Image (tube, rainbow over the protein chains, first blue to last red):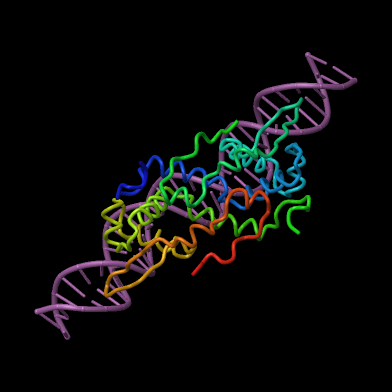
Length: 112
Length: 112
DNA sequence: ATCGAAAATCGACGATAATCGATAAATCAA
DNA sequence: TTGATTTATCGATTATCGTCGATTTTCGAT
């Protein structure tokens, strides 16, 4: 019982979808995500900083956003934080068709 | 020859991807798109305005953005403009997996 | 306890984007 | 031509976002 209404998607759902897409609506975040996806192993913030050429605070900021949506996972060891890609979250990311069809918003942003 | 490099996605590609996702990174645009997708027939700007409850100039602005990415198609009749969903563009929209895998950016934003 | 290293947070700035009201442009009818 | 209707554009305001430098926090080592 989804898209048989004639009105637009309710505002709340639309905002949830939008927050998903916002996570990938920035070139720097896409670079960070692609970086973590190519190297399959976890990377420290420092490694990501040097590999991406972006400031340390900026990288930390973006990693936080990516973690909130569940795109990346954190594990802390000593003073370091290691981030890795969250494959299960990548696969549950909504498609444009989902939005357009009015499919229910994916379970929870934080998968796993 | 895609994701076997160790560095991040080149900036240009990352920006192209980001521009795609930016198109759906706004709740109002998602509402407009979902509205056009549910009613399969074209809608005039005025109809979209009353159905969405957003200002006329705002709707016109968002429709322009959606048209630039190819999500919607325009046809003008008299003083009216009728917008409809572009199914072929919806299906070619990149997935999160595409971004993460470093797949090539979809052909052209303006499909059809 | 003190120091150094790593990451997160804070404060500020500039740029971008969303929204609105008003105006302009285009079209058709009388 | 004049007027009415519909949409696009313009100008301004406001809010959001990305970025940076500096500071703070956390943790391990000495």
